[in-house]
Every structure is written in C-alpha cells, then in structure tokens.
Amino acid sequence: MPGAADATVLAQEGRIGLRQWRILRLVDEALEQGGVLTEEDQARVLGVPKGGFARLDSP
Image 1 (cartoon, rainbow, N blue to C red):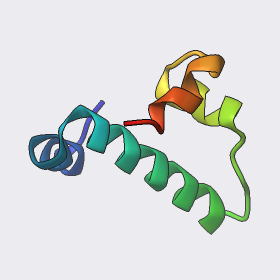
Image 2 (image 1 turned 135 degrees about the vertical axis):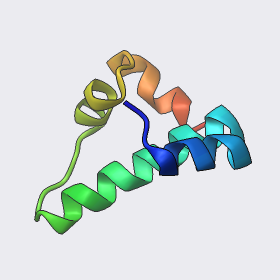
Image 3 (image 1 turned 30 degrees about the horizontal axis):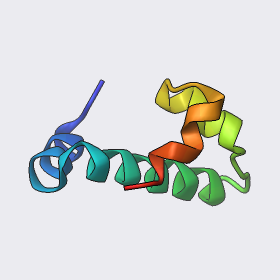
Image 4 (image 1 turned 180 degrees about the vertical axis):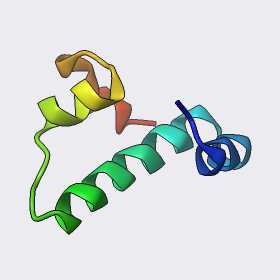
C-alpha cells in the first residue's frame, strides 16, 4: 500500500520515478539490515516478473 512519500514521488516524478525510488529504498533498507537483495528478491517485492526487473531500470 503506497504511503504519503510514495504519493509525493509519484506526483513529482511519475510512475518510472516512483519505481526507481522504491528500488533504491528497498536496497537501502536491506543494506541497513546487513543484507543484500538479488534481482529476484526485488522483483518479488515489487510484484513484477523476474525477467522484467531489468527493464524497470531502463527509461
């Protein structure tokens, strides 16, 4: 469920900007907890197919 920060980023940066921001946030949270996320982990959290994750990074 999107929060207020997500809504702000969406309004300012659009869908692609929101996706990129969410990816950065996920990676930062994992690093803070001493872990790392694979592309498969990130795809699962973001609700996209594993093969489609790499395309999320492209404009």
